Picture (spheres, helix red, strand yellow):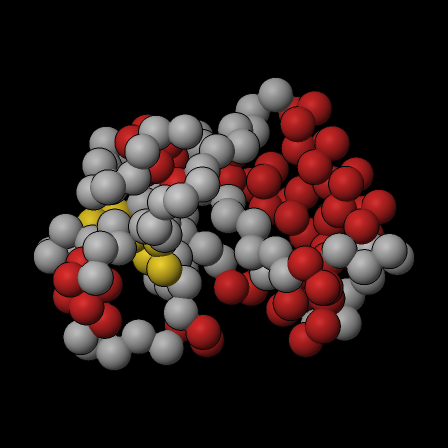
Length: 144
């Protein structure tokens, strides 16, 4: 607690060409807005990108595509299986508490987490340890 945020996630991924430099200037170490890869990478200015696939967000699957909570859990499980088969990639979960946390959805989400934990090949981690595992050092991010 009492720490400044080190990561940035823009509304609707609405970056300009100036955004990466502005983020560094204001103390951010990474962004989660570029879903062009499933591994972290560095901008030329040193800002890091932690992958977050917009198409797998709870908002996209549950509200835009109108899938069921079980359908959401199945899609995330399928993505985890695919990425694990590729030798370990990042599967960020973009969660909206007032969407996935509703009483009629939370059970499917808890079941998803249980199944991912039971796999034995999924690692639940925050940004700094993930970036470090890929050989990237996030400025100002403490290992947790």
